[in-house]
Length: 253
Image (cartoon, rainbow, N blue to C red; front, side):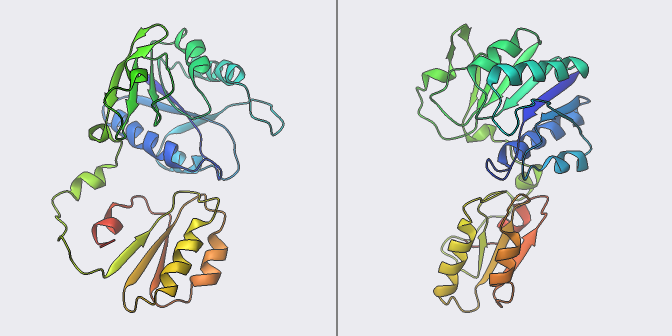
């Protein structure tokens, strides 16, 4: 059995979609499933993380000359790659691809799973995952234009790396003093909110409180951040972390 994941990452959209799909892909592989990733070549993409994890990546040839491809064109090219790798099941995690894409692709595969964070989009799929806190009566989770959808709703279905489960036995102390602060503003942070946060923390003159800063793999401001804050005694930078779990476990805020 082969699963194909249609997911992208870039400086603009970040890396969260790809990272959570990678988490699911690793679980599927542990159960003997072959996994292929279908991605676009985009500025700041982190498909190297997929290859480092031992998964194959097939790139879509959309030929859009820098312009976004239509859902129809993306679906046709995705189906070409799906058939090329003989995948029977597809996982879609993409804000720019919706019902039009799903209708086209679902006709030619065994099953389609969609990962979505919104409650106002309708879907044509066999399984819908929304791992967020959502209204209890979000109709789009149960109805599609073609009938009922099986839905997994809520944080209990969150696609977290296994390292987070291992930290659950470590109970934080309530109202403990703040000795260590972790800062992570996403895999790309195109607006450089990290700098804004660090300037604020520095201006607070926090004394001996350690500030641990994670710079995401697609962050275009990496060099600038190191130049501005690299010599600050209380600030520690981290890059290329395989998981945030160990860092968050020892952090107070």
